[in-house]
Length: 311
Length: 309
Image (cartoon, rainbow over all chains, first blue to last red; front, side, top):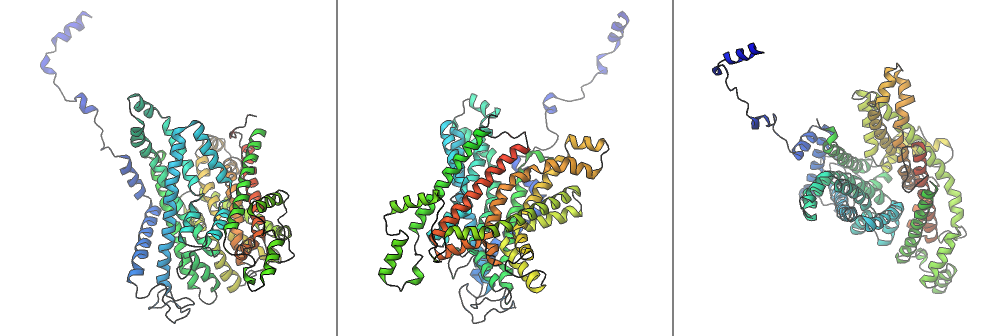
């Protein structure tokens, strides 16, 4: 022991030097920190199907906006050419009243998309309000609100919609009302679930302990954390609204003539299938493509937002 | 369990009451009368007709009569087709729709499970892509479009199936397929993802480590557990098959209940609309209840809300 002590003393201090490594630098992250939403965008953009869906929707929206404006024909103009096959003048052919199917498809796209998106927005507003009030309030109010939603959701959706449309007379507004009358329940349930799970998280408790008020909690914690689920639900509501609209139009409860949504056109096209198959084919193709694209984007969003799939 | 079923039965009753009342009041508000197409007959005859169906009573008497009739399941005579009672129409046409519906359900579950299993077993290889593409197409293409296309190509052009009508098993294949494909797509997606999830679980790894063959593992272990989400889907499936029948029966000219429902709407045949709506509601509400009970029986981990043994 004594020898060791001596050998220590023999090492001169100038043999030591500072090689760096300050404590605050040790704490630095090796990689640049990526915010949550940047990461979501990154993961979303790696999903080929979702990107395809997004591009398809973009193109469909552009065509729906501009084709009826710039086309030489109008959607109600009768050109005297009945059930003509697709040609250079009429890209998608003409129908039994001699109207240009190309313009009608894009005019129909406006109606179908408008109905789908409006119904989804109404669902969003009612659903988010109902769900968050119910989730935040808790107790008896929550119980009553959720029982109302339970009973309403037990009512078969399409039967109600059909009967409502019979009564309200077919049209744009009745269609939207009919679609959103029970459509909001799903959104309300999802929002309530999110609110309940976030409400009991430790960081919310911590924020509350630090003196944050309810408004701050909603703004800083509830909304950003529930946004993902709300976004996904909304993206997936639109295609189902478009589908239901097409279904109802097919039953003859759609927007009245001379306007026509994709569903009405497909319904008329189906009757003329043997003589003019293009009248079914084009609206059918675009309904399917739109529903597919919205579903692909919704699925992609869900995957991108799922922290479990984080790499 | 009993408490849970009781609670659900009360929900069903409330929902039925809402449907029955809503249908009644909406029908009262609806413009048009079932006798409108025969406008030119004298006022006395119209008054007599209204008296016959009780349409001249004040609304609360009509409502009371209607509620009593509904409870005794007597919806009266069709307003459009003289001498045919709504109950007759239902009992005549429902068996046809039921046959079609059961066929469609078997098809959609069979097809969906098959596609889903193939996709999961060959994860990220071509059979997976093929099965997923079929599933996605099935979900994206609405059933009425599919029905029209199949009728045109398979029945009309190629003559493989009868074009329309209801005279035997052959006639039911295309309609059942048209209803089934959308749901088969959903089921395939469910099975695929839950099989992939189960494939990573410890008990599957254990089974493989013990030396069980690939197929034995799939059928004895993975698939059994992967089928659970499909059971939850049975409720929406029943509803989907019912609504699918509205249009598909129309396209293929099948004399089922769905077609009568749609015809009664265009005819404003109040008694038939109300009768079929209530009938459909009862079926759908009980289907969902049965599925929920079934689910808790199959998966003991699920505890029904409000059930305390």
